[in-house]
Amino acid sequence: MKFFLNVLVTGALAFVVFVSCKKNQSDSSVATADLTIYKRIYGATSVSQDGNYVVIKSTALPDHKSPYYQGTQWAASMYEAYNGSGQFAQNPSKIVSQNLTFRIPLNPSPAATKSATPMGPIGVSLNGVPFFNQYAAGGSPLTNEIVSFDQYDGHPQQQGQYHYHAEPFYLTTNKGKSALLGFLLDGYPVYGPMENSATVTNAQLDAYHGHTSATADYPNGSYHYHITSTDPYINGNGFYGTPGTVSN
Ligand SMILES: [Zn+2]
Ligand SMILES: [Zn+2]
Image (tube, rainbow, N blue to C red; front, top):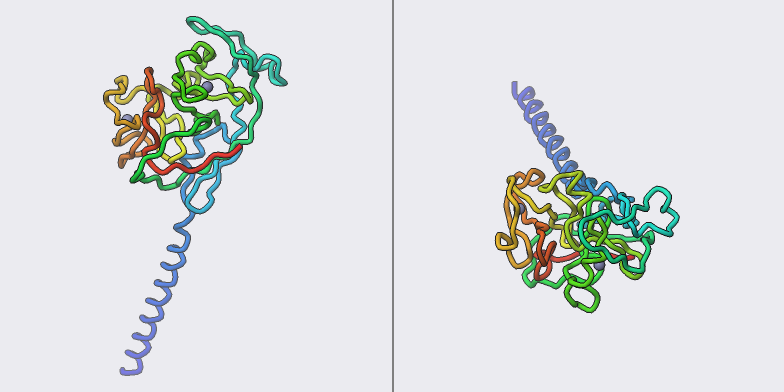
């Protein structure tokens, strides 16, 4: 009887050790993040994880037509004359393929000290085209540049890098006005100009142009930016979180 009990106790201990080893094994794999939401950036040439960052690579070539494809190798299929409403004054640049690499935090958190957005890319939209802030070169207002936005609300800068300062109409037409449209460099998501069937106004957003609530993609709630129809459009007084980096 005593022998039998010893075998039972030893067996039980072995089982406990076995189970705890299994548990340790699964714990060590937690570092691999679920990149599903970042793969919504369908225009990216790659989406991968590097430690606590998600790395998104993009050529920044829009997947919609543009007057700015005129005179490029893609003109035959992608050029379209301006057909938007209102005035259009095309700038002298043509679209040029880029090698953008965005490194954005996988687990964004509010920054204790907020930092201003840089000139150039401040985030990436679903089609891989970068978001720019509310300023023209030299930090001047966008006022004089808006006339050069094409029918999809984008334009190239002097090196031919195509970008959006405001609502990317091609994406909101295809994905919806309240859809996730991309991410800023601090890792927080960017949404369209509507929420719960109502238009979002700047007055409903904080100084950084966002707020915290549940969304279809973040049912437990998340801070997120909204693109609105008036200045500052995408971001306000800088990043809500700590920004990652972008290189070209
Ligand atoms: Zn611009
Ligand atoms: Zn919202």
